[in-house]
Length: 552
Image (cartoon, rainbow, N blue to C red; front, side):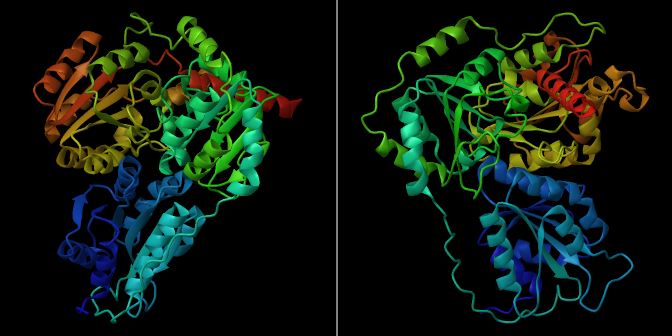
C-alpha cells in the first residue's frame, strides 16, 4: 500500500464516497486540502466557514450525492455550527472534515469540539495514525446510514505524520428494516374500503425513489395526491392537489380535509404540513409508512416501518383487482377549477413597492423552465413553492427551515450550483436580511455557478418580525434594515444585475436569459412589507390559540 500521511489516508478513503469538497483553508486542514487535490477531489473555496457545510448540505439535497465540507479548528470550526445544526435537524448526510487540538493537549485557540458537536446532535470521529482510513469510513457510513452530519476530526499534530498501513474491509451492506408483512395487510384493507382516499408523499418517499410506485397505487385507488414542500410534484398527475400545508391553496386543503383514509409516505407531518392541526378531518384514518421505527404524529392510526418504495410495491400486489373510488377525482377536479387559487397580488401597494405575489407570478414566466431553486429562510419562503413551477422534488432546496435560521442561502446556492450537471439554471430566493448575513459568499457563487439567478426580496426589513411583532405594537427600529443597493454590490463582484422596482424592470433579466443566461444575475427586487404570507398568518393564529389555551 502506498505510503500516505494521516491527512492523505483520510482523503484517499473519502474520495471513494465524494467528488466535491467545500471549505475555507486554515492551519488545521491545509494538509488535508493538499491531499484532497492529489486524490482528484474538486475543491470549491467559500469565503466563510459556515458556507462549507451549507454548500455540502445543499449539494446533497440537489443531487442525492454526498459531499464534504472542511474548516480549520477553533474559530473556523465554531463558524460552521449553524449550518451543521441545520444539516442535523434536516437529516441531511454530510461530513465536516476539520482540524482539532493536538493529541498533546488543548491550546488557547482550541475548544472541546466533540462536546459542541454532541450538543448539536452530531457525532465526532477523531482519526488516529493507526486507523485513519477505518475511522474515515466509519464517519462516512454513519452519516449515510443515519442521514445526518458527522464530524471527522484530524488532530493538528497528526495531520502530516505518516499513517499506518491498513487493510480496509469492504463497506458493509446497509441494514434495511421493513415491517411490510405485519402492517401492510391492514393498510391494504383500509385503503380498499376508502371512498375518498388521499396519498401524501414527503421527502422520504422521494429519497426512496418511490414516486412511480406511489403514483400507480394512487391511480389504482382513484386517490387524490399531494406532497410536502420537499416532495413537490413527486405524485403529479390526475388528482394532484399540490403542496400540503401553508403553501397550498384553501381549495386543495378543503379537499384534503374530506379524505376518509390518508396514506402518508415518507413524511413526518410537521405542524406546517398539517396546518397546525387543521389539514385533515377529525374522522379520517391516517396510515403512515416511513423508514423510521416509530410514528411521528399523534394523528397516525396505523404505522408501518418500511421503505416507501418496497411498501408501495407490496400494496399494489395486495390491492390487485380492487375498484377505484368512484367520482372522487372528478369532484376534486371540478372544485379545483372553480375554487380560489393563490392570490395574484396587487398592482398598487400602500408604499408603492412591489407586491411579492405579483412579482413571483411574473418571475415564474421569466425564469428558465429548467431550474433548481434554493431558498433561504425568511418571511418570503412561500412565494416560490406557491407561485413558481418546481419541476422535481430535488429542484427545491429549502434551507434554514429545519433549524429556523436565515443566512444560509448564498452558501447553499454554491453547493447546489456545483451539483447541477444537466444545464439547469440555479435560482436563489433570499431576503435582504439573510442575504446580508451571507454576503461574503456571493463571490463564491459567482465563481462556482455556470448559470445562476439571485432573486432578493428586498423589503428593507426583517419581514417576519415586522409581521409577527411590529403588528403587536413592539418597536420596529431593530426590525428595519437601511436599504442596500444589492445590484451595485453584485456588479462590483462581477455579476450582472438590476434593481427591480416595477414588473417592467424584469426586462433586464429577460434580456440576460435570452443572451444565454451565462454567469450570475442578481435581481434586487424592492418589495412591500405590507403583504403578509399566508403561512405566517396561519402560524400566528396557531400561536395565539395556544397562548389563549394556556391562559385559560
